[in-house]
Amino acid sequence: MNNLIEIWNKKKPVVNAWLSIPNSFTAEAFGKMGWDAITIDMQHGQTDYAASLPMLQALSSSQSTPMVRVPWSEPGIIMRMLDLGVLGIIAPMINSKKDCEKFVSYCYYPPIGQRSFGPMRAQLVYGSDYFSKANENILSFAMIETQQAVDNLDDILSVPNLTGVYIGPADMSSSYGLKPKFDVKEDPVFSNIKLIAKKANERGKIAGIHNGTTKYAKEMIDLGFKLVTISSDFRSMSAHAQSVIDDMKDKTLEPQKNEAY
Image (cartoon, rainbow, N blue to C red; front, side, top):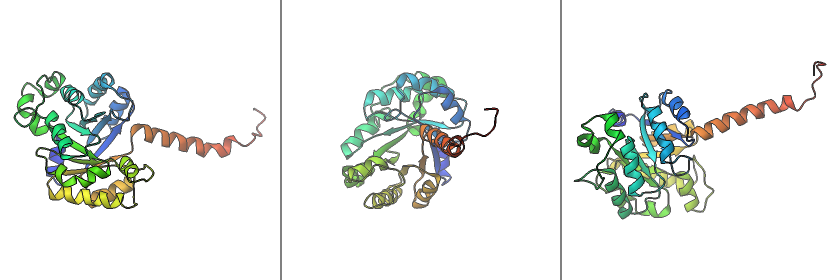
């Protein structure tokens, strides 16, 4: 079911899109672009559970693996989103081994987890044998975005069945008293980024990170990151639209000499 596992087995990185706008047409458009994975952001994006359903339906015809960043590491929303058919969960603010153990348990059916059975749409999309194959296809990513999480990194990475870790550079920056931003090159955050990639790879885990630009994302792949997200639908739309109006300002501010005006 999960194409990302096949990509990683081929020693290739996964390029991930980020959807903050609760719109099925936006999801459908991104699904036609060729992203390896597409993540619906329920934490800082504008999307809730009800809006996620038509977005996932729009992604059904694409080859992109559907994932979601849940609002919090909480069993109700994690299990509901898995039942909708997402194949990857990114959980924010995982700061300790205990946090991570609880999170991972919500993602998987017994005996390795405590996920409740009732896949509904997931079974409709993936088939009647969904239950028997779910555990080997669901991805679980713990977000490392605080100084506490970095301090507990070894313990977090030791949790069985955790797929990997995903860096939130903005929150990590603010955790160290820096301005929240992507594409960080300042220490101690940049040193943490390199350390997380190194340790995740040593443990056989996937290292992921959110990036502002493709240039930085390529640098992260060179550091060992196997899941890179670039910008988001909202940021891409806003940046392009702003560049258009900025480029036109010099013309629109000039008085027009054409008498037709």
